[in-house]
Length: 429
Image 1 (cartoon, rainbow, N blue to C red):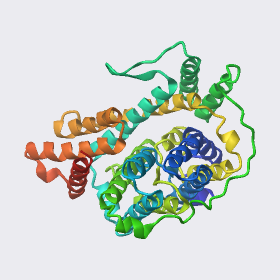
Image 2: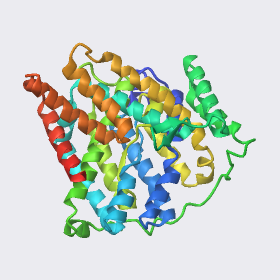
Image 3: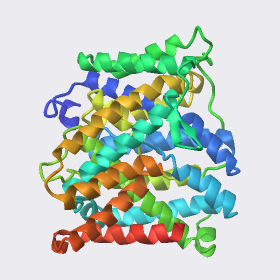
Image 4: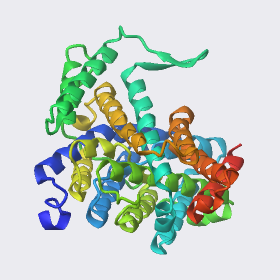
């Protein structure tokens, strides 16, 4: 096992990898509850969506761990599931079976460009400055999600956001959880994030905020959604724009997640390229197709994997651990959903702070590098979209370099993503 996962080479141990997997699972376990609810809004059977969510996450994570040897977990993506349910099915009136067909087609395109090496070339052609901006921006995005989950940030019609009530018990417990997790991490305690999450959840029991839902439950039937996707309908429905949106958002979100996690894990090469990227991209694309076959929206790499990386995860054993836990969640759903959001939110904020460290490596003497990178980082939380931030950053990078008379420094992959992003923004407007 050590030889297969190269644990000694990466300075890790099986125990640390398993703890990292548990950390990642706890920070993304909310998808087990959230995704079935969103899928149900599209008319999909709630129980079948729950099973599809767990199995898609397990298969995708296992593929990432075994094929790419990365500590990155996969699950149905937040944002894409909302687009699927509320825009494609809800607003546009597309039947969910046809919408699943569109998801499968986008995954098939993903697979095709991954096999040809085009997708790997595309991501490796991204300049280091944009990769650093993407990593920091995803950190900021996670930070906003975490602060909102803690209750420290709330919406405000006058100022967009403002400080939440510090008198709310969940907010107080979340703040204590953040201090605990930060202290444990500062002391170098292995599994400090997991310990902090569990202790915070336990603190909620006396206040009735953490409910013990039991342990075992048989999983519902997958029959209502399994292989119910309508490929012919998706092709005949004229869903070219929808398939393109699924494809582009999946490409940008996965690129951002892989860049951020590999940079944080120290797996990125000095020139900014990502090793074994082709295998990671194949895992992503297969995960998207498998998710559609099972009955859920696009399966993507999860940025919450950064929590496991911070806990020490460096190999595919971390992702494989997540896969096993998602399979167990099929039978332990009541237990898996007992950890409340206010207990996991502090971990996201901590990871956000750590991911912002990449900005120190920007060339602050070159405005054509740091300005697009900072635009990328700032746009993600303020548009509440990783894909939008990446798209704006690429467009800005290409145009700023061009205006500065340095257009030759812009790689072909940057122009491709910038052009595709511009088309996407036009179609969405």
